[in-house]
Each structure stands twice: as structure tokens, then as C-alpha cells.
Length: 259
Image (cartoon, rainbow, N blue to C red):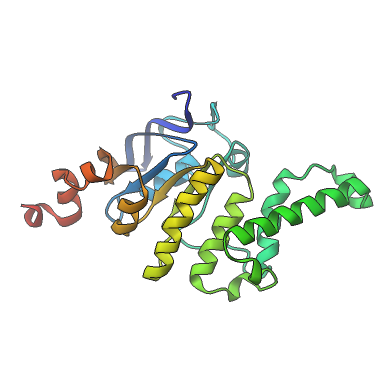
């Protein structure tokens, strides 16, 4: 793991019985990087996210966050090391308000001990005020402040996607993993998302690892790409290099069409 990388996978393989889901996979993501992970359906992209966030334990290889091995750590402990994610299928607290969805995530940084929360001491109330202020600030950044009192389930699809990103940002990550954040969005919403991802990187010095099927978005926002096919890395480099790679063309189009 290089000194600049906050999240690193080295030689990671994962097997489910007779299925080799990942083979000798490696990556590094540091603050300020925009990295895309692409490949055909079933290539293993979400599996990579699940390994990086502790949902799956690799069969071999190592994953480290903030210079520490995550082997055996639960997802919430990995979040505490500065790695946050969104999901391909949106996982909001649907029956809670937009504001409470973000506020819950902010509580990971709460400072007041539990006894002070029971007694509602001045220190606890000051902590709650700080959390409320940060939650509203994140909603404003994501263009959702006017929705703060709405139930999450009532938001339009694109706004639910933005709320999930806001909730991930509430944990104050160094690296943010976005799993198909543009799925179901209109062309205009995707353009707004591209601008948002760039601003998060620039303003928060955030590393972003992105899974996305929309090649226009990927090529427009990512500085480096990793291409997976059946769990194997078949290409890696700048977008303009990757899009011309014969193996990538074959993986997406099939050998006959590529020829």
C-alpha cells in the first residue's frame, strides 16, 4: 500500500464454492482520486465493493484502510476507518425523514457519552445541535434541504440517490464507494451527478471509487479505470486508453462483434 493510498486491495481472490468470483484483484484509492470500476454484467464489480467494505471476507489477499488491515472487521468498523459506500439497490431508512436519514449517520461522530444523552446534559444538547447543523449542511450540498421533513420513501428516485450519498458523506469518509449512482436517472440528473462527484473530490479532498454502466458518465468523470471481466482485471489506465483496448472491446461486445 503506497503512502498516498487510503484504501488498498492487494492480490485479492474470492471463491464461492466452485465459483471464482475474483482473481488476484488489486487497487489503490487515495484522497483526491476519481477511479472507475467497469465491466459487463456479472464481472464482479459489486463483489469488489463487498470485499472492500467487509461484507465478504476474501479467500486470499489483503485489504487495508487507513494503513490498517480490515481482515475480520465488521462493515461499521471499516466505515470508522474512513470508507463509506452507497448501494446498487437503494437502502435508505424509508420510513424516516430525509433529515433523520442523515442525522443517524452523523451520530457515528457523536462525542457525548450515553449517560449524558440520558440526562440531556448541556454537553449532549450541544452535540445534538452540532449534528443537526452538519446534517442540514449536507442536505444543502446535495440540493435536498427543502425536502428535510419528507419521508425518504416519498422522494423521487434521483433524489433518493442523492440522499444516500449525503448519508454516506455524514460518516466523514476519506474514500467514497458509489455503486451505480446514476442508475434510473435522466440525462440531466446524470450531468448534475457528474458535477457533484467532481465537486466532492475537489472541495472535500475525497477519493471516489465508482461503479457505473453509463460510459458517458464514466469517461467524463473518472481519471483512471479498472476493467473487470469474470472477476479478472483485463485492463487498467486512463479512459482514452481503456476504451481502445481490444480485450475491453471484446468483453463488452463479444469476440465476433469486436472483430
